[in-house]
Every structure is written in structure tokens, then in C-alpha cells.
Amino acid sequence: MERLINYFSTIPSSHRSIILVGGITFFWLIESSLPLFKFSYHKWRHAGVNIFFTLTTIIVNFFLAFILLKSSDWAVANHFGIINWLPVMPLWIYAILGLLLLDLIGAWFIHWLEHKVKWMWRFHIIHHSDMQVDTTTANRHHPGESVFRFVFTTIAVVITGAPMWVVMMYQSISVLLSQFNHANITLPPTLNKILSWVIVTPDMHHVHHHYVQPFTDSNYGNIFSIWDRLFGTFSHINPKEIVYGVDTQMNASKNESISSLLKMPFE
Image (cartoon, rainbow, N blue to C red; front, side):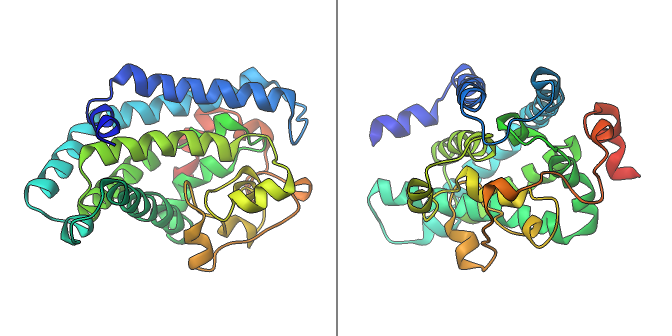
């Protein structure tokens, strides 16, 4: 455990890049060989649009990263936050609680909020407008959405009281799980049923990308599936029946145009 803490306390930027690029490459290869849907689209052109938004997300997080660092250092130094108020516990329990709380506040709650607050939804709709969901869709976020997602991640760090090694561990797992649950793949039914009680699987998250409500407003989770089951937002549909997109934004050419997507929240 100490070795794990030391690694995530000083994780190099190059390793974080490897996690991002390696994850996309790994799931890209799997979905190319065993796709859930055989989309009639130009895979590289589609990826190019989503990678553009991945880069804008990286840029936003790069320039705001010092806020996250200072927030975590402040919480630890002042013994502030939920996990700092609990009795002394083994480090592995400390880590799991930190991951659960960061996932709840910094991922599930802001995601739920984006579907309930109109001006937030106007930015988040860019993510849902992808009509060929695959592993590159994971980071398809408008720069505006990247900003308020970062704000809620910072709030989550302060409320949780997470040290930076927990934050870095959370972000690394979050990147990989997001790429996994957006990937154009499906799992064997029995394996999916077992895993989906703990983590968000592709079959579970693809439901969230179905083009009509109430499915669009369900399965908000990113890492842990417990939150959707706990808050009654879990739903299921046969993966083969899913139609990706948003019923109000089904213009394929517009949804694959970077300039149109950047302007979409302001229309």
C-alpha cells in the first residue's frame, strides 16, 4: 500500500498520458474486433472530433490543476473533510472511502445536475449528441462543461478531505473506467450482471446514451454503479435496442462538426 501511495503521490505526467492514450488504444482495438454495433461511419474522422474535445479538456485541467493541488493540501493540513473526521483506519479502507466519495460528488452528482439544470445541459448535450458512441466519446466534453466539472471535482476533494495521492488514483481510474464504459463493446450477460453491481459496465452506461427519456436521465455513474442503484436512477434496456444521440439533436453532420458543437450551448 505504501508503494501505491508513493506512486500516486508523485505520478509523472508522462504516466498519466500513457493511461489516457493507452486506454483509448486498448479499447479501440477491442471494439474494432468485437463491436457491439457495426457503425457505417469514418472511424478516424469521428475520433478526430472527439479527440479535439479531449485535448480541450486536458488544457482546461492543466491550467486549473494548481487549484486542485492547493485545495487538497489545505484540506489535509487543516484536517478538514469526511475521511479526515473518521477514526483511524487501514489505508486501503481510507483509499476506498476516498474513491467512493470523489466518485459520488465529483462524477455522479455533477452528472445528475447537468441533466437537471438547463444551462448545464446546454453544454453537456455535446457529449450526448454523439450518434456513434465508442471509447473516444468518453472525453467528448465542451470546454465550458470541462470547467464546471473541474469545479465540482475541487468541491469533492475539499468535502472528502482527500490527499493528492487519492485524487490522482481516482482520476486515473476514472479515465480508464470512462473509456471502458463508453467502448463499443458488450460483455457476456453473466459477467455484465456481476460486474454491474460494483462498477459501471458498457451495457449499463450505453443505456444513458439512448436518445430518449427516461433512459437519458438514468445510469449517471462513472466508476461505481452503487450510486444509481441507491438513488433509484438505474435502468436497463437490451443493448441491441439502443439508439445513440439526443432526440432534439439528430442532425448527424452537425453533431460531427467541431464548430457547430462549440456553438451549440449558445444557440
